[in-house]
Length: 402
Ligand SMILES: Cc1ncc(COP(=O)(O)O)c(C=O)c1O
Image (cartoon, rainbow, N blue to C red; front, top):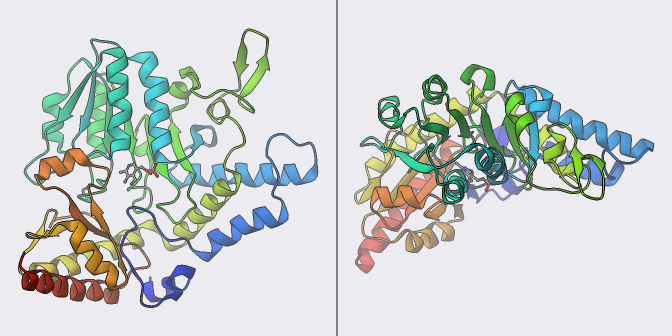
């Protein structure tokens, strides 16, 4: 894979000065995805599942074909894929539907301080309503979730385990397969937040045997406004819908109604049609290159960058042994919100803040951090430009007296 060639697929990168290092927030979109979305609006942009006319059949078949591609992307079956607005909606769906109907005061929900807010707040809500207790896996010294520490909090009361597959701040890969096996032995179900995993790592839901898994389109070369919930069919079948209205019903009477089977009972109203088709194209794009090739490329870039960062004084790296292309750091004594303006001045797009992971920021005992994240379109030259800017930023702040 040559990232210089890949860059040409991404129209935003026609600006040769732009160094985009914020993929963990949202990835850039390649031409084939943009073209597929345009094609929908230009050539068959009508509603799905409703019209008894040719254009609607075409739209329905392309929309459902996208579901098929996404299912095969994670080795799931067609009916196990629910389209949502994003990873957040998918995780909320599990908590509000499965969580609220299955949990009660004696139960425990295992989460971690590594979670994005979208993987922990829905369960806080379940805890408030049902009385189930939230239990945090202690992170190890490096900030990782380990099997050893997971065993310490897993009990016969554990009913749900909700954990991230890859941390959006530390870039660590959770040993999810081992955790799922242990959780199942105690009768608990596992909901995996794969928002940072699906864009970068091959996922086989059958192999890891997760019960639910959620991710977003916009972090994996796809459009915004679309996400995916994978669920085991027996669980999806017993879960009630949480939104009601058009398209999800079977029959409607004055006082009650019945629903379609999953996934349709969870997809109320006009779905994100162009977005699903766009995500299908993103999956084609990533499959064509190969996720393993992408992962190896990102890891090489992060290892190279960390080595260079270590040579600069006053740089504190919080995850020097990252498993991925995510690097989290600070310039000692400089607030990340001040530092970020320096990088922006060099046309480097990166992130400063709590990264929707305030629990981890508190665990790190810092007010906020800077974060860069690499993807398939980043090159060694991008890394070098970042390093140069980081050196200059550090010198500048030193000069003005931090
Ligand atoms: C680990 C993780 N989980 C969940 C989300 C939420 O994704 P979305 O905002 O697309 O719903 C994100 C987004 O940054 C994330 O990084």
